Length: 347
Image (cartoon, rainbow, N blue to C red; front, side):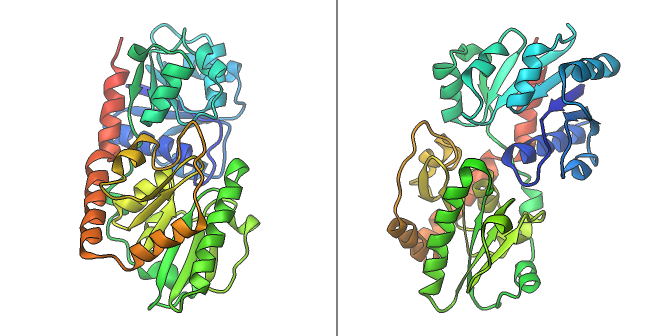
């Protein structure tokens, strides 16, 4: 098939951007011809490795020309600006249209306006499935749940010392990592988490904190035993260098897939350590990222969970291993691409 993925900007480190490029790479691996329609962005150089890039004006006219010139079988939009283009563009009859709803930040009206054009809506968590069906009024027969996928092979076997050596962190310390975007509504959450982590590190003799993510160096400064790394392309090395990772959504998934004990906390939910007991809650809300209401959590709770993971019991070690096993079975990017590919064949 000839498949065109639509995303407004290819910014660094975002969950939607990573999802689009992971999907493009898997579809290309399966033999499909993949294009990406985008305004551009810092990750253009990465996307060019496995997709044909259509960049320039992100307009209805430009999209119409791309569709006419390239005879795409499938068009698949992934964010609000892309949804708006879909709603306003006359798509050739031979072309099937899909949209993936990644968060409740996409207005309900924008989603509804896509209905006449869309073959199927895709949601990435049970919470998002409920948002699209219950709150946006889309019939459940037109909505599919396909959770995010992460590349398992890419996340295995990184050398622990890369981050420590690069940033001068002692080898014999415990490292707590936080990764997230310090943009828009997520900055306050990031600040709060980092403040808790650094307070914990300062109360211990052998604990350091590392912080990664777009915008982190603009918002935060290095402190005693807290190293702010900024955007990291090689997140595999980041996860492997941490004894614990704190994060939500894709960060939590990738960290778990790499075998690192993970505390899931996002803008909407505090899941805590991801273990079998918290697994249903983690899955429902995309590991803390999705929810209809914000749930409060305390500094004491996060610090207590950190202590448990830094000094795990034998049972907790088994539970953490089981969480990694579940992620590796359920959230592989190859499995995600197979399910998306099967939807593309719907008439």
